[in-house]
Image (cartoon, rainbow, N blue to C red; front, top):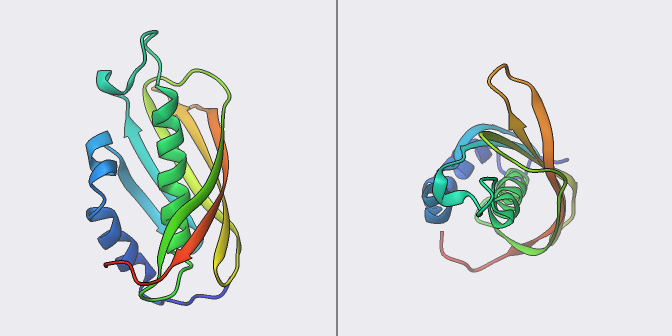
Length: 145
């Protein structure tokens, strides 16, 4: 994929800093690469459903966040990205620390096709896939920076 914004790391960090919802959840941006973003989240009681596992909305949001920020790494300078559609699969219960990886699978002029995976990470570092997604991100021009 072509690099349209040579300063994409700084751009993504700035956009993440302004994303209040991600901060409310407690998401941490761990790494930014061209076409890929990794983030983590320690599940706190407010993010669990009645059975003590991550609420499905948390998994969906985490998938959306990393896919969206991955899309920003391939967007042009001054372009904005919004979710047009997302399909999330909750594969197994999620507990503890979560690691999310978002990728751009194909970048077009106005649409980016992205995917993500969310893993539960055990104390010994073992990763278990708990959720994945496929999403379409649309380039939106004219939004505030």
